[in-house]
Image (cartoon, rainbow, N blue to C red):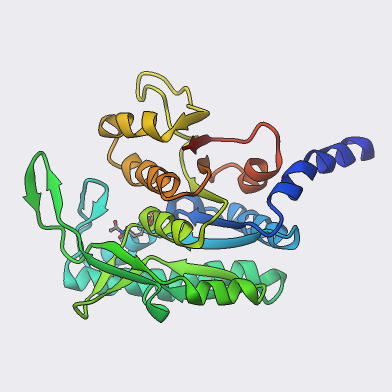
Length: 287
Ligand code: X2W
């Protein structure tokens, strides 16, 4: 790239810098998007870039594959129903240990290579997420999926305080219940609930697919833009892994977040491409 081309690439970001100055952007960092070391570092670089550019990024992380590996080591099998982990009390201990004790620490550490920005918290902290037991229904039949939670209340005070202090909150998707139990919450769902409660300008879900496919598996054509209404009609036809991600985007937009995106975390610097370029990337959900 010539110096002029570099300058032009920077100046393309100007309208977006102006538009998102001070804006809260909730980023869901999926476990599938964090498997490669060089991509992890680029993700953290992007987050710190956003922070220096005057946005207020908040990370909600997943860790599905990391939980699977740990459950394996403990000799516990992994089962999913409708995209959600069937969470027995013994699995719950592993889920919490991996998300809060391992993945959260890793993400905080990556961001903090750049300075004292990231502060990790579990959804249990300061009543950030309160959940009730989720009752799953598959083909009209109720299915017991254990300690999986549905968020019923978000208290974003601790996150707001960290943002006001210039920090980057890094949140694990564990919730407390009014009943004294702890709950495993799908991280896409948790990110959407937090984006809504914070009045975020954007929700960006980083995953390991290019976006929402128009006609999977017949074609790999990605839908660039979709309205909440169109998405709601499409939801029942989606594959189970895609459902929590697209539901999260739908709920965030229905909850007042102006735009929600599903982007491919396997692409380097995908976060910057999404926020600062005219073309955008992945699938955008609009009201
Ligand atoms: C998820 C929480 C982690 C998650 C789980 O136990 O795998 C439920 O399914 P990814 O990497 O974003 O998939 N919880 C209830 O969502 O991680």
